[in-house]
Image (cartoon, rainbow, N blue to C red; front, side, top):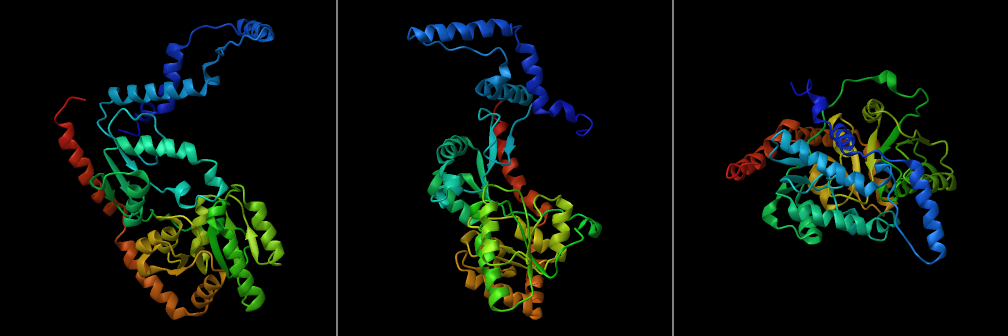
Length: 367
């Protein structure tokens, strides 16, 4: 029934309908004449503001309409509670909601330009979102500590629900590129600085050029501003023949790259949790991840850890996993137990009490 009626739940369609109902006929020629008059008045040190006849040219107006459209949809469908999966996107803060909090990246690595430039608007969004949330859901104790320390969220309004592993799709080996160099380490991550590709390149230099290990590295992901620098470092160490950068690839390709990799290496500087190691473990690909509090809480003894600023330690962990079959099998066994405890069904079972608790509150009033 929901799939059949899906169009009526589309927020964008709701926005378009609202715009069509509220749009007033305008003459663009009148706006051009107004622009000319504004220039003339400016000559006499008079400044006036013009409203463009196209509502879509005013982003603030569009956001306001989006909020109104969303609230109309909520009222029409008699929705009591909204669940926001990310706090960068808020059609409305005026209806009760549960919020999933991912990280405080701009607070954790404040020296990175990629977050320094976003600091102010992130602070504004986070403050507004967190203060009005019925519940804030995070993935582990490290995430909870961040919410209390950076977001001043009362402890009783925070719930911990560990990430579930994803639903694993069927195998499609035919989708793999023909020219893959085996054996390989795999890292799926956009080329942001905080993904820390650089320490992996430095560790690969140690393994290939100093220890003579025959191993390759496959990188996939969009350029988020740091790809040129990563390529410079690959060239600096003479690793062009050992590194393949495939750019953005379909999800089915990512899954097959996990399945055929010797290991995933995930050197991110940011937690408190991350999904790629969980994806890798769910298909039997062992992992080496950065030693962050959140990662240790998330993966326990199912992966190997390293200091994200120590290429030597990373190289040692890669070599030990690559050359020690017994260690690899032990990690796979530990990962299997972890994955069994993190099913999507279990995730929903832990979310359900939050929804049922809200139901008690909502029973005291008419929405």
